[in-house]
Length: 347
Ligand code: NDP
Image 1 (tube, rainbow, N blue to C red):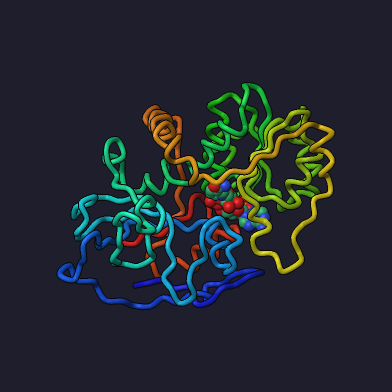
Image 2: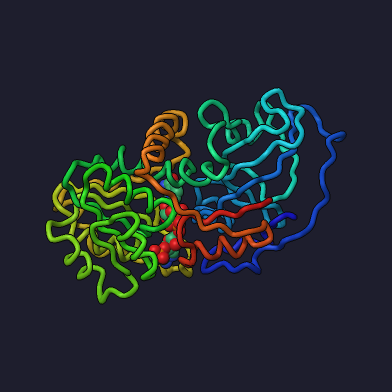
């Protein structure tokens, strides 16, 4: 099985029919060349940034998917056969660049595109269950940890607002914020998600933004002392409402803007409250998590593993079975259908 992008979609919503699921043969070990390995994924991750790779033009920070080519992403895979000194058969490999293909031949040699994207799960990473690599210690979880700590600079007692709060990144922001003694206000798009945020993740306030009469009113009610930190996963109108309620010196962690990823040409939301950035001396800082693996990932894994061991951290996966259902799973993420981190289980 292989998941192929049929064509680029510059604007608007994608559907599963923009992809094609084909069958492929199994590559033969006998044909492997030096520096090549055969892998089969355990799990592949479907993530919002992938929409940027479907646009076509390289306005995204990752290169576009090729038309008629297999898509790829973060994941965890097993090495079936190897002619690389870096990997052996049965190794677990993690990272980006894992094709959405049941079996694929990858060149991992020096200078290859995958040389630094794929790693062997070794040391403390070798002992964790495979789903941790797309869950507890996966890319979105790391994103949450890094953004909150390094950009949010949280201080006990402050109020943080988190959007897309039950999702892959958001659920981690909520839990870490509670562990750090913040007052957490969480927004999500269904009553079921809101219930989860309150009952399981212990958000101080959680609300269904789709039912709010206005975002500004909902935020005023939820944040009587204003907003000190905003972890922004959605951008657009919700960000605008936060700008209006932000306290002096508030920090805005510009993680994502999913509300804008699928708008039609010329329909991007125009921020009204920009002048608050100056008047309230706000900091808005974006970041691309792949830039921080070398410098921060080990520390992140150590901290999260400790929290998991102590029963202070949980991670909800939304598992879709079967590679053939990956297109629908990705469409679902962009339409808010996922509840927890969306992943596809391959075997
Ligand atoms: P999620 O698991 O949170 O899934 C996406 C969620 O976004 C949906 O479930 C939905 O939740 C919400 N959503 C979808 N469409 C809209 C919309 N039109 N308006 C508002 N909300 C919407 O995804 P992730 O946690 O993986 O990603 C969250 C954000 O973080 C994304 O913007 C992503 O691009 C960004 N990101 C950035 C990284 C970086 O390096 N900067 C790395 C990883 C992620 P709900 O039902 O609550 O609306």
